[in-house]
Length: 250
Image (cartoon, rainbow, N blue to C red; front, top):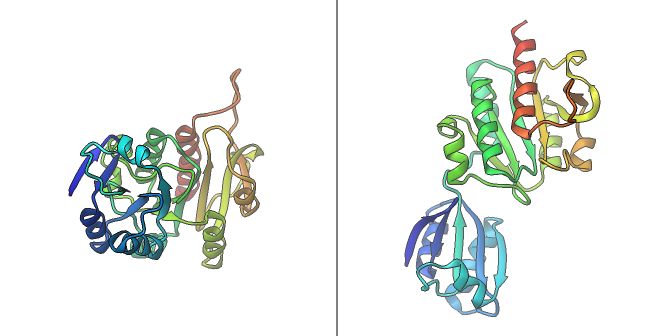
């Protein structure tokens, strides 16, 4: 039916358009389907969504009508990322190609698109080989993220994974170790941040989740002298990323 950009995400409406989006390999973040609709074309779309591990939501017709601008959604609306996601393996290969030890930035539940865009920009400038984000409870690659990254999104790979903690375990087997930012950690200036490393930055309000923090080898704190006790997530990522850069240059 119709494909258009709406606010931060690419919105795809209509059965044919959504099905073609799946078949063409377009990265779909979420699929909204009219609850109770189980005819052939819709079942095919749902099957494709499950095959690609897309977040599936069954909603009322009223909800679909509210989301739709064409009013011709035919019972299905898909939200797609504005940019294509990379694979984690692509990042490791990029580091190997450059002759560098892997430096990845992992984001645990960053929900503000401006923060994500700023972190991708910092990752590019700091020489990180990629950014990893979780599939759920986090912002994806939207138009706002792309704009805030100031073009860095075109050069820095971003991967979306189902389970951040499991991904960390897999990367540990490949030689990476992890440091996360937390107020209760040891000063970043006392830590050895050299070698193949993953920097973990947590949610703007709650910080790094317990399960992810348990997978980290070190917990780093940023010395603060002011009256408030926390930094914006993108600023914290920048400070720690450049401490890693500083130590790598020694």
